[in-house]
Length: 350
Image (cartoon, rainbow, N blue to C red; front, side, top):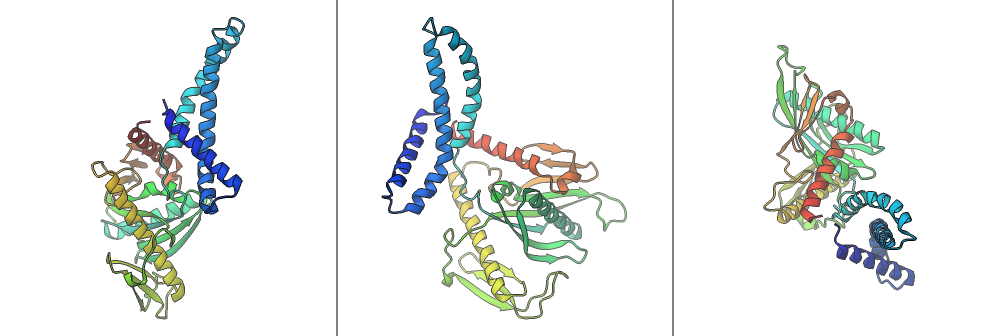
């Protein structure tokens, strides 16, 4: 059963905001409007749930009336049948929202153990996410890339924009392991390699304030990015965040653009660091949850000889590796999101 007090609080808050907007007396119209817009779908869900409860109560009262009993007996089964789904829906609506879910995201991919094969796999992951973004209608932009000699990737940062980007991609952070025969291996032996993926919500200046005294900006000669383009001027920018020692480098052709990119990446990393601290404080005695945290956790294995993808967090195995590598990730992400929701429901006691 959903707590009645919580539903009542939501309804009363929504009515208060609605009245405040109608009167035009708000000192901070933008903030009130934003809260109203965020609360409206929740309030509508609450109203529908309360209406269903009211209809059931009314029909049950009709059972005592001989003239209305037959009609009530006809209506009650259908009304009661709708109740479990309505309760499940309202519980999901009441879950705390991740403020970053609606944000664009930065994806950082780096090869782990495995040498050249790990770099090639990092390139495969980049292409997988690029194709997934295309299927979702998102904008996928490479903002920094260093290629390996064999066509793999030493390091890449991509910027993804669209509806609900971070909400979907946040489950991809962690270590991705591949088992296959490398193109560099003539003996046909299966090797295990890995690449790390970090998905960071894009942060705006209002999210993270970086005082100018906290950063050092150095300009240097760019080394190019593995044949993608070669810089011939001192345009590369390296920004060092002094309090954390965090270093961000951007080596596009425009020095001005490099400063923008480097600050954008730095804000995203610091914002993610702050989110990690908050999450750790909130769940200090709890194992790191899906979609939040441990970058060193091995989350998934891609076994090419068997055509198998296994996500170790939820014990999900799919034998359609070719489709997955082509960007068919919705089934995996949907399962991870459902598992995260189930854990939140348990924590909230709903």
